[in-house]
Image (tube, rainbow, N blue to C red; front, side, top):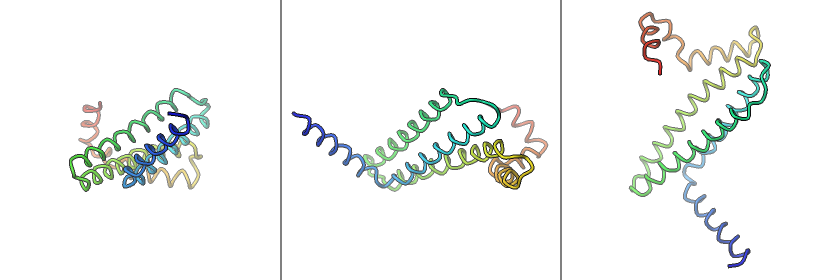
Length: 152
């Protein structure tokens, strides 16, 4: 097998995998976008507060990205082999929305660290963060004790 045939074989395999994953490509793009913005705004928040670019932190975020995409691809593949594509797509969609929630709250928190406290942008992100992170629940008396005792 020469180099040209090997290149054609690799392209064919990559194309087959891409075609197979086409129904979840939107979720994968969403995850990549979330991971990129989370890493970018986390880096910006660190730099604004006098920190430096932390290679270890970035590598950890990159590994998280790869793991979630692998996990979602695995779920989709299992659904394919079980002939339950609807369930697999719902599960992938659910994981995607969970990531949007968690990374969205983290991005809002980082934006609050970046923006000046007296600005309108800070107030907007603070409101979004308090709604998303359900800060209101922390003001219920018995919930504070529960959260403190059950923190992992």
